[in-house]
Length: 323
Image (spheres, rainbow, N blue to C red):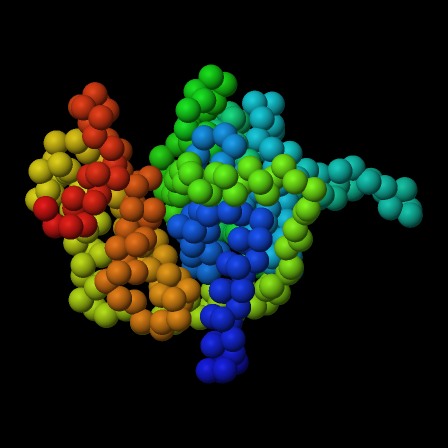
């Protein structure tokens, strides 16, 4: 049973978790917030950024701060679905009878990093579809449940096109948030240079146990949202669809808008954001903070938008501000 005292304690520990991550990661406050939102909301996160921005280190640091299993899968062009999901191995019992035994793959961990996910072909990318939605793997007709909590984080590089395979829209839609990792500020970059070229090394402490993460995720679903805000979310999402949008930029630059999953993701992310800020009820600012990360990967812009250098973020900000 979750008591008032345990709720306060859990929320306070999220601040300890953030501080612990900052022992290793300099800056990137917004990105860390979005990672914690994904964890608390029980969704998956796709991180995109140029090489060298510590995307992998950030995920590894988060995993170190939680007492649970961690698995890093390096996605390569020759990676096969069985390399991720596992396979059956032929074995012999004491009577000499042969049988197949399922050997689970590296996705059977609490936190899984799919590093450079767009380097592997669609066949292997598709192996993640079921587990991202159902939190289970079906192999040879048998369903195997993934450990709880299960948190998938994927990284990709936006500038390298050679030898990469863009994720299909259906798979991208399964990510709760699309997080863009940007360059550090001048001051942060100087701190990074000093911290990473010296002899001192810092260690991350395990702050959360897996059962505490599960309690946080349960608590997240109990965060209140007013009916008026639910209607606002529904209106935003429906307005991203060109066929029934009142927004001129949507009509001009968007081919396909967001589906109902976008609204679900935005509300869950806003609930997690409220919890991180010590609130048990969503306020409009929670929705605004999570609006772009929750929706930017769910809109498909047309060639006109690309040619005129109009990006999804600009379109969404105009929609959110009601222009």
